[in-house]
Image (cartoon, rainbow, N blue to C red; front, side):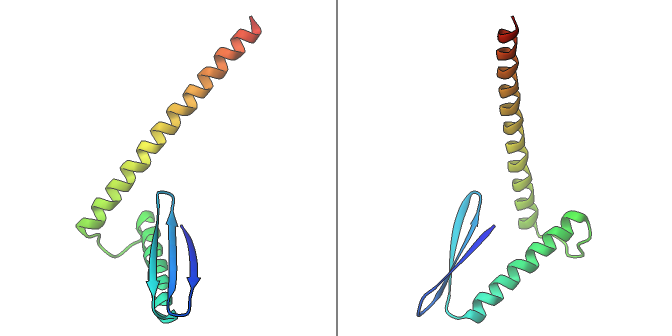
Length: 101
């Protein structure tokens, strides 16, 4: 995730970018911004703990659904990446055979 902080006279605007999309958040004070950033950091740390099996907090049904959707999307991307790599290798093998014959 990439975080960009844009400050104006009246508000602070935060752009949070992940590979699929960008989200914008507006804060009226630097304290609100810091609270948001601290919350994001703690949630990220909790996700790391959960992935390692060290989390003591149970998942809500919504979190379980999001984890399942994220895992499915990641697996789909891996399958596509594998097919693309196999296709590239097949093309390379055919080109090599033509050069050698």
